[in-house]
Image 1 (tube, rainbow, N blue to C red):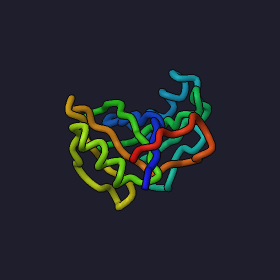
Image 2 (cartoon, one colour):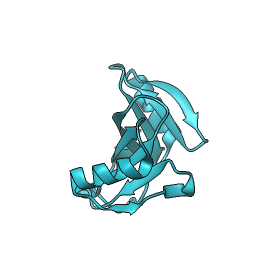
Image 3 (cartoon, rainbow, N blue to C red):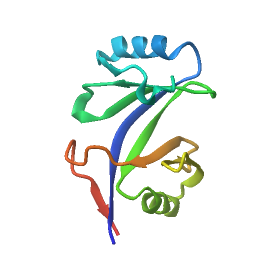
Image 4 (tube, one colour):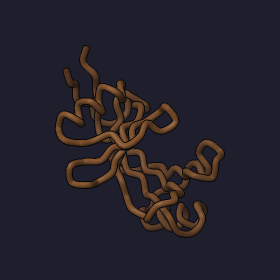
Length: 128
């Protein structure tokens, strides 16, 4: 059975400062409003709205060095992780049984997350 995936957006991982300060900076820098200053109520994620092409952009408070990573969203995260492994990526961790943290052969970390708003943005690619 085929599964579908596409670029979901970008996570701005912030290891320095507070979530509010980081969200404020990136909101002003990207001219995107903070639409949810504390998604999930855990003090870890702030959602920025109105990104071009409907992409999802979040500021994330992290324990590691600051960086930007992309998310790939899929209607079947396990099938997508397997597809990406066949291309040379490796699974790092299944986070809270909700998404895969992965690493590309180039060393870049990225996540495979559940698909949000399937009707928004470009149509996802179909994979066998």
